[in-house]
Image (cartoon, rainbow, N blue to C red; front, side):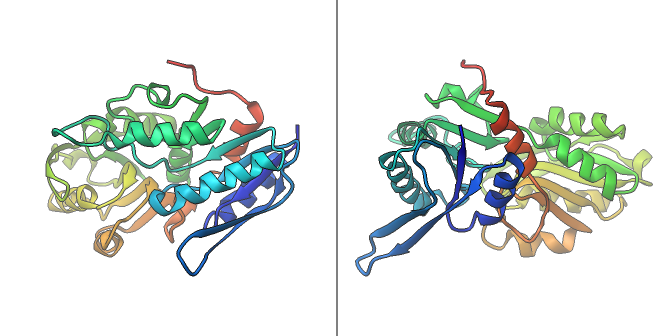
Length: 298
């Protein structure tokens, strides 16, 4: 069955790459605001009798989701056989339990909204902490892709004598996989979080690796506090100025300005559009769409 790839504004470059890689028609979604603040949505492309893939990284989910719901409904009304959400960055995975009385468990609420709007969900390296898989919260078929091999290959091709560094214990398996793929050493730091903006990091003795270039790898760069503290701790040990390679370049508030002086270079995938994007995901996503394989249901 033929596919139609539709991009929510801001996602056009990635959508074009995906469409080209999987041989689908590239369309777009036109949006604007009426004077009263309501949204106007128009699909450019023919959904009838096609699989429609809507591309939108959810770095700003609150203003984006209603537009996505309108676009999905329009595609179905115009005859789409299937409407899928391709969200390289999946928001609302942080609040995965009720930490205080009365709190909304937004990860579950958002999953219900997405599951009631789309037929399938594809994402890249979702922040699974207390959930073993996306199927623990999403009731639609999901496809979970992993960017670690792409990060590893980029590091191998662009960094001389790298030392892969994971910023906390959670990153140990991930950092180890990247290091193993390209045959280089790795180290893992220990993080103690005191709040959203306050962390302490313990760094093991890395003196035997002083001739190598530390490469901090992480799935998300948001506030940047962990990466900043880690970079300063590495400098205290006399290490080379580190590189930073992440999947999701959120860089909230002033994080980009704060981090830039601390690293020789900051590199990210294009899961979230950002000047640091150097690692493309289009082929990875297109291959997954073409295969049609979804995650095992938990």
